Length: 109
Image 1 (cartoon, one colour):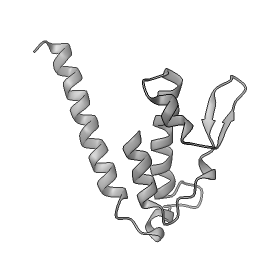
Image 2 (cartoon, helix red, strand yellow; image 1 turned 60 degrees about the horizontal axis):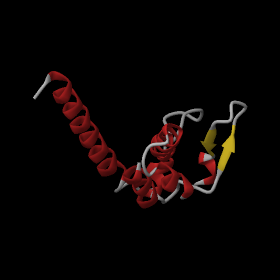
Image 3 (cartoon, rainbow, N blue to C red; image 1 turned 45 degrees about the horizontal axis):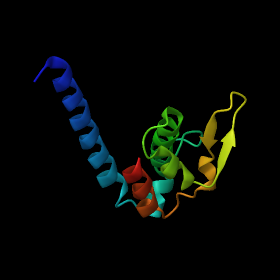
């Protein structure tokens, strides 16, 4: 295998491992754990998981990646910035007691 193909294989393998780790970490969390934040001004654990998955979805949509339009259509709350970029209104999707839903978005993204 050429060096660039091996590098791409390594990237996808690393992504898969990270994805599995995220899902395994978020899936069993309780509402209290999802709402925990290290400091008042920082995101909670659930907000971080939501932000990661929705950030991916926004990125795929901006790239017009295959399947991204269908994925983006599953999210009802968007806003547009001054540069015409669409952003998911993350706060419109609750995170308390929603580990299963957070895993769903992580899995889709």
